[in-house]
Image (cartoon, rainbow, N blue to C red; front, side, top):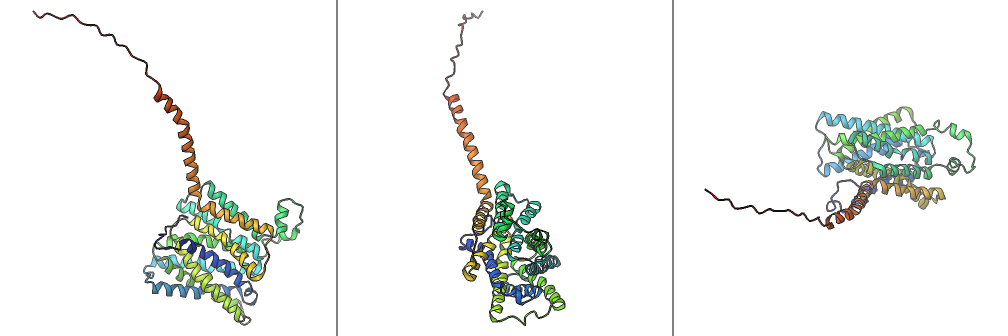
Length: 356
């Protein structure tokens, strides 16, 4: 993966790269039982505000600088509005109004938007293997999240899908999940501009606080009984989602997003539903269908193709050059082994001249 990490400085870099998506996936499992007993905007605020405070404490203890210019605060405010308020707000409302599987497919399709934005803004090379990987990734998470009968219907196997399901597809909250995916994609790209003026970890903490305050404000106005029905285990689930699923996960994600390939990093988002499925199976006894296992396999292949796209393209170029070289060698050998025709030059001996 094209991230500038020193092996000596980050001996467990691969694990750190995967950690945000592992934490997001397990946080989704932890939040499953909490959502029915709380309100969406309150839950979104809980995931942001306390996590932002924790990140700022860690940044202060590690000596990271605070924002010191008005440009820094403007970019942090925009970052917080897009990736904090809009993303978490759309996500929370979308989770309430849509099925978990379809919502996961739509929210985890954001690597496509990140790839297009990175291509446009930063001229990141995607190439044939990258586009193939993105296509396989979307196909994989579709197999994971969409109902099996929908897949069989699209494949023309004769399975019936009620027309009402398709008519109500974007009337129950899926469009909110799509807006959430786009907000996260824009937020991922914005971190490159934010880090021109402020440290990425500090910016992540402040953007979570700035983005979380409007969510709690909306909750105070339009929601009621935000926490009265929560029990002890659900508070623990909220704490896990806040500390691990937000503070640590977002801190690592935006730290890595501040340098390296955004397309490669964002492609790892495809791992989130895989972790959610696996831990749902282990902890909640959820059963994976054959199509979901196929989706897991395709998703893993897609991540490999996206992150190795430059190497794969380089190998292709190398093989082409080797083929050209192999074809040209006999020609060169024939040219060097040919004997030149002898050239005979006749020299006529001149008569001696007598000087007077």
